[in-house]
Image 1 (tube, rainbow over the protein chains, first blue to last red):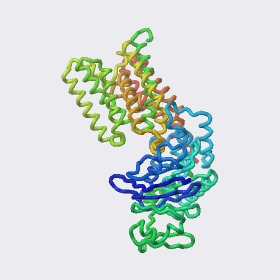
Image 2 (image 1 turned 60 degrees about the vertical axis):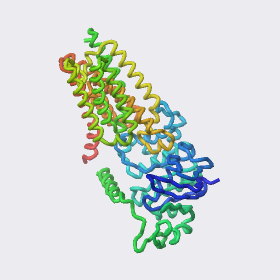
Image 3 (image 1 turned 120 degrees about the vertical axis):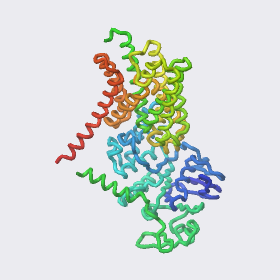
Image 4 (image 1 turned 45 degrees about the horizontal axis):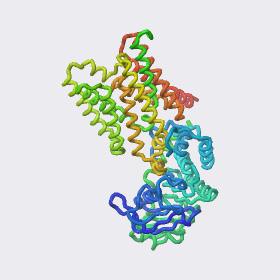
Length: 278
Length: 269
């Protein structure tokens, strides 16, 4: 059985085709890097797998069933947004709010649910953060809490939307290794979207590369090639291997841009660590 | 001061409203919708004055309009909630209509003051029962949606993926918030609902990082401020609403102290 199956799927958002007639069979128990230029539809595709967007044509099957909202075996880590009013809450309460949070009633957790929160905090190495306030955590620590939330329950498929966004290279590596370790340990299928290929290289089983409504799935050697990427970018692409790293070039320029927010976030995290050490 | 019926009523009304405002206010602050709450009270003013104009009880006009406004805001959802300008325009238009209705019914100048600034000492027994019923309904509704509400407030995208209808939660919550606002307006007036809905909840969120403790503390603070206000008004003969706002403001200011002192302590060599 495939983890995710796309059968002639077209996804339309705001009158624009994000994916056009895409067929995919994503295997189980694999770490899949989801790449592609900005606006290629990485987030849209994840939302479609979650059942939040219906394909305008075709069918999506997730773990053998049609994609529907609230699938118990699908964990999701949305892109981080700024924390404004929630900065004063404890990390524990933040993670716990997602434990069976869709049920009606009072937000009082059963002993089983509390153990589950403890389990996922432990899995991502965030048990020591439980009593801290969200606002006092670094970007990397907050990302681990979001990852913990995606592991609540018994997921077999994780959809992680840009977990590396606004992280320093050092924390990026730690995040990739953490997810890779969990993927193997728990036997998960992981879709991990990112702006850059290189931080994922060591962890990847397969790459899912999106662009111009198309999608290419396969190993790095199969997908990250001039002919395949030229089709996805609609221009001449050259792939350069350099000391274990891969650069996707259009003419003389690498096409993978750093996340534009990253410079600002660097400065912020430096400022944060500075104040904490004073 | 407990010998007078009106004082007993005032204390009981203040307690009911404080509990409701403390709980609902906590979620209002957590969701960053305090301004929407403020706007609801102004819309309620139109309802109250309109009701007086057609010979109805102002409280029901207040309740009807705030709930209608809350449901409307919830339905507009993201389009409106993040738009302070739109809310600001709506609330001033609402207040303007309220003024117009008053203009047509000039005899009710004292009623206008009571609506704008509250009149807890004027609460009679039937009103007390109405407040109790509305408050119980509001808290019962909140008890049903509290869990998905918390989830949707902290992690909307994830909650949506887990099957929570963000729109349903938003509409339901603003309708409940509207009930709380209407109750609150009865005590401190439409212009000052912030003082019981937002002040105690915001102070509680500064003082504790746990949700359960935060809600409990928010209720306790609102209750203490409301009773303190009524008692001080009895002693000084100054308006109750003044005392409640003064206490609420002071508590909010003081709630910043622990964090400030901690920072000082950490920064000193």
